[in-house]
Image (cartoon, rainbow, N blue to C red; front, side, top):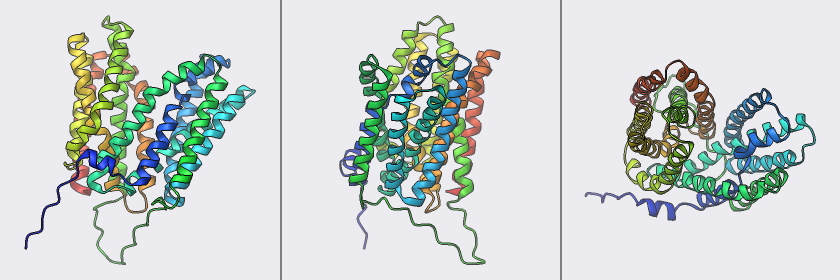
Length: 398
């Protein structure tokens, strides 16, 4: 007797039929993202509070370090107390630290507050990712992550519009509104996720003494993949650091770069979820490697070309690569993670990506100062090495 082949659900069916915890999380995070103003106005706020040009980089580095610590801590907490507890802790901590920042009377307290904001602001990411993994079938994870990213991107697009209106009144009002949206997100999660598949994930059973070690899913594979994705994040960050330098030196106005960023955001919002209907059907190595190659190719062509007739289509290729790669990265780490450790490894991924976004611009601008063309050709060479490493991980630890 031949069993009927079950056809995968459409992306729309996956999204509309997503379990309640997924919808509750996405609604809560969307509300939070719409009111998330700190990262946009942090530098301007610090200048307004009297921090000097020499002090600013140190404070910003401290915020970044706190964020990376938050990613690791949030992942550890998600595996210990469950996704709901970790998410509520993150949002409550964010609300309290933003409220403290709004009324901080001294520079020292401002530094403490911004570091707490950085810590709690990133600690929700691994718990959210682990919740999406726990509440979706493997075949549906890519569109579920794409849907989650859609909510984040739409919220991020709406947030600055609101922030511009509030910031004209005062930074105190701005950060109090930010604190209120964090508290609202925490309340949505606290009430909505009660008893809804958010308990800690069962830990893998220990093998019998003398049993063979089968390297199907394990620590080394996930760690190596996260380290390679740190390199990818460093490459990706060049579109926000060395790319505008290249365009400016080529004679393009700042408005042209702004249009490229707007084009990138628009394409991601409208295109990433439909693209996930294709990438979900492929072994994760295919969209991950293809996406990285497309991102790097777009950067290299735009960097070496310099003129608008090449830069615009190259930036579209870069954006397509982002849409192909980004939702699959979390699903790939989830597939390699041992049971009971999903939160920690999602935290490791978030930390590595944050580190790449932090160090990438510094490394890129240093290389660019020595040789602009050397940077872009260097990205091409590094991309080949990274993709070879990812294919090796797939072969050994799949």
